[in-house]
Picture 1 (cartoon, one colour):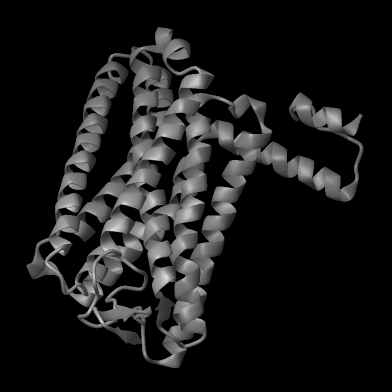
Picture 2: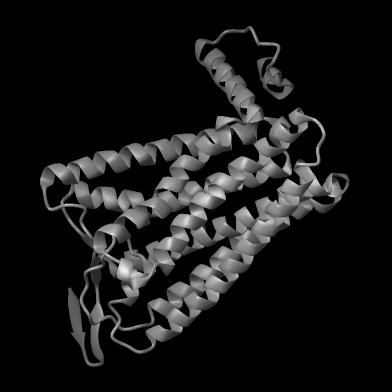
Amino acid sequence: MRDQKSNGSSMTEFLLLAFSDTRELQLLHFWLFLGIYLAALLGNGIIITTIACDHHLHTPMYFFLLNLSLLDLGSISTTVPKSMANSLWDTRAISYKGCAAQIFAFFFLMSAEYSLLTVMAYDRYVAICKPLHYGTLLGSRACVHMAAAAWGSGFLYAVLHTANTFSLPFCLGSAVDQFFCELPQILKLSCSESYLREVGLLILSSFLVFGCFVFMVLSYVQIFRVVLRIPSQQGRQKAFSTCLPHLAVVSLFVSTGIFAYVKPPSFSSPSLDLVLAVLYSVVPPAVNPLIYSMRNKEIIEARQKLFEYARLQINKEPIIPLGLPLYLRKSQV
């Protein structure tokens, strides 16, 4: 697994952590991850299609939600398919370049998602606390710039971490104690003191993450103060219905991710690390569509119209329901 060279040994592949050595349990892991992966593809795909096709949902909140679904699709596609393939073919290997690509894509998508969740908190703050300035502060151009900044910051963050990590020599084995190439586990294989640069970079990143978290907390403190002053119960419920899904997604994403990366060493064990990795990398992309569409009447209604239109197209029925948007009726003319 290593090629001996004049300046030391270089890794050609890594060995990922197997969920089990028993063939039956490997197949169980494959089918379980396949079900989660298909649920994530279906849920996020429906949200993306619904928002893209219904012009009533072309608002800042749903524009950011569409970007969130795209990031969720990318993040779960970075880790789960390779783990499924390894279980199906009873192997643990991932190439050196494949591991670097996995770390880059995972950091890119996860950091961009966290930046986007921060932007979405700002969107809810402006919508509820400064409604008269909503159109000015969150116009179409501003929304595109914010989304581009989230994607761009994630890209730069991933380039920095990936380049810094894979410039290190790895000579403490090739076994990664995780089902995907997780950065802390890769750093454990480095035999150079230079890994402290990456540790320092992670510490700096944690301060940035904490800063965004404080911003979101302060935003929601202001939001709840305004919402609780709304005289009508219906108005309060409507305001809460637009905030609680985002708050639930942030809580799930932040709590699992932070605990996985900053837990005390005394709490660390291979089984616990594996469970936490699944919780922060696999569960959120699959659960987020359910959280956002469970009580969102606009998405539910738009999805029902989209399904009805698809049924009519399949059956080739000329009758168009009155509730269908005009842009769908035009295609029947």
